[in-house]
Length: 445
Image 1 (cartoon, rainbow, N blue to C red):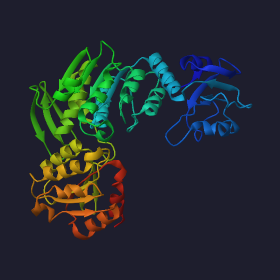
Image 2 (cartoon, rainbow, N blue to C red; image 1 turned 120 degrees about the vertical axis):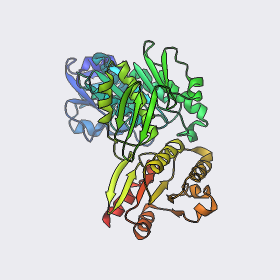
Image 3 (cartoon, rainbow, N blue to C red; image 1 turned 180 degrees about the vertical axis):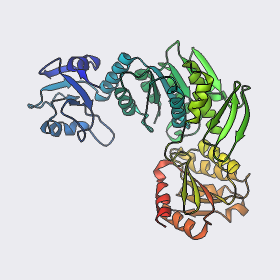
Image 4 (cartoon, rainbow, N blue to C red; image 1 turned 30 degrees about the horizontal axis):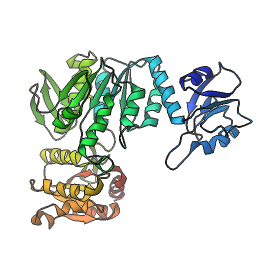
C-alpha cells in the first residue's frame, strides 16, 4: 500500500526533517535487502539488531527517504526524512491508520495453543461470503501485525489476525492497534509459563485481547473456569467447549472427524477432538458474520492443516503424522490422545523437548510419561535433554521399551534400523527441535 508523504507524517505523528514533495507517494519497507526506490525505509530495533545501522546503506542504494529515531542520523543525500521517538510505534500507527481507511470487520485470535488452526479454519469459513485477508503462518507479533494490515487489499471485508505473546502487555498492544470486532481466546494452558510464572498470569495475558475489543463486539472464549474468572470484558461473551449441549454425534476417524452442532452436520478433514474445539470458534465467528450454517460447513470442509500441523507424510512405508510446529503439555496430550484413538498398530510416538516451561520443565515432561501410562501398544522414543524425562514418567515395564536420543540424526538412524516400515508415527516437539531433520534423514534412505 502507498501513501502520500503527508499522510505518512500525520499517521505516524512524525516530525518532518526534510521533504522534497509533500504529495509524493511511498510504500514502507523495514528490510534494506528488499526495499524498492518508491519506498521509505523504516528501521526497527530488536534484541540483537538495530535497523538504524543500515540507513546509510539504504540511501546509497537509492532509497529516497527514511524514518529515524535518532536526530543525529541525517543523510545529506536523502530527500525525505521523518523523525519519530519510536519506529515500531510509528509502524503500528501507520498500519492502524490504513486499517481504519479500509474498515474491515476484524477478528483477532489468541490462545496457548490452537490459535493458528483456529485462524485458518475461521478464514475458510469467512471466505465463503467475504473477501478476506489473514496473518500468514505465525506472523503474530507487532511486526507481523503491521505487515499483515499493510499488505491488506483495499477491497478486504474481513481481516483475521493471530496474536501471540512473549510476556504481559504484548497482546494488549496488538489489540490497541488492531481494534478487533470479534476476539477469540482459543484456550489457556502452560505455554510460556517460564516467562509468566503461572497459568493465572497466562490467562490474564490472553484476556488482554479484550482491552481494545469494541464495546459492541463479541468475545468467543474457551469454556474454562480459569478464563471465566479472568475475563473482564463487559460486552457480549460466548463460552465454547466440547461439553456444550448443542454439540452432538461426534465421530472420530483416522483422517477426519464429524459432528453435529446446533442441528448442522460438520466434517473436518483432520482428526482430533481438539480440532472440533477449534472449529466451534470458527463456526460461531461465522454466525457473527451472518454466514449460513451450510456455507460454514462447506468452509470447514475446505480446511487443510498447514505445514507441520498434523501433516501426513509417507516415506518408504512409514506413515508420519508431523505435528512438530510447536508443543506444550496441553497440545501434546491432545495430539497423543487423537493419535492413539485413530491410528492402528504398529504405532510409535517420537517426542521432543517442549520449550518455555520455566523451572518446572522437567516435571512437565515427566507428567507426559505418566499420562502415557494409561495407553498400551505404543512405542515411545524421545529426542532432547528434556524429553528424556518423559521416559522417567513411564511405568517400569514401559520404560524398558522406550528409547532416548540426544539428536535427530541418531533418532532417524534408530528408526531406519529397528522400526518396521508399516509403522505409523507421531512427531511432536517444539519448533526449535527441528524435527524436519529426522524426516529428511528418513527420506535420504
